Image (cartoon, rainbow, N blue to C red; front, side, top):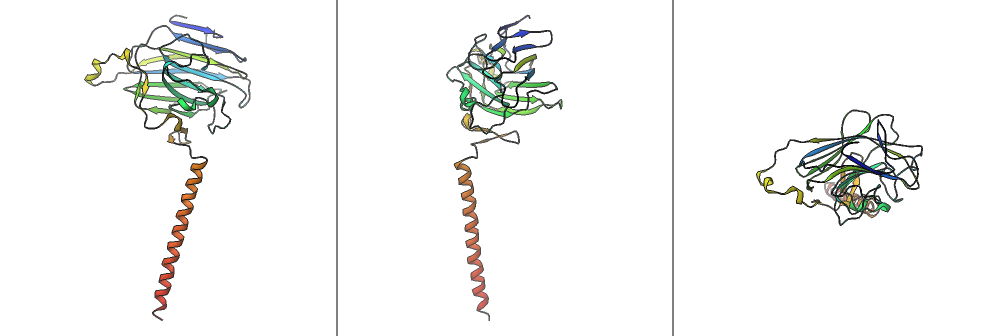
Length: 285
């Protein structure tokens, strides 16, 4: 296959590239040989995750990469940890038993080589944002789009056979250099699945940049993201958006306590007002 390299358990067919078969302890990846020098781009991925495992008895998932390193096997869905660049994880198994997320779960991570992906927490501490997507064992085509333009990262899904994109992730303040490589990888452990890539298509976006951008050496930019809140505060919202801080545990208790105190205050004020009116009415008898 021209312009692509692959390794591990990856198997090439005329219809798809299988990163892992539905077998335990397998990992594989596929990487493009040509670095991407586009400042604004959109990647469309046609994929399929399927297998014989029942609910929560399959794993682990696949990852899409735009990174400096390529063809380096490792523990993060079959690829290198402490990477430089962008990763989009399609995680199908909840390793954190205390999680409230619904899996499969898609998340994004930007790394300058200093961060490590924590599998035991499903990458919660380094996640920028994410969403739930029912992408496994579907009888129709499943797609994912990753768009990067003027510092904004957007991830969209088409996994419901509606032939339309659904927003999953939208983050501003993302800085990614040019000259990195696109790839995909997958891994299985005690549980397994078939992880297939059917196609990966990259599109250039024609976007106007301010004049000062012409003086930037985009190959020297360090991957980074400016967030107004900590990545670990991102939690899935049924509306498809995200809120800061999970409303669970003590936060729920405080919310209910404030509501109860508000009701009590209103009741007391109402009782005082009612009593004064009664006393005022008695003076006219």
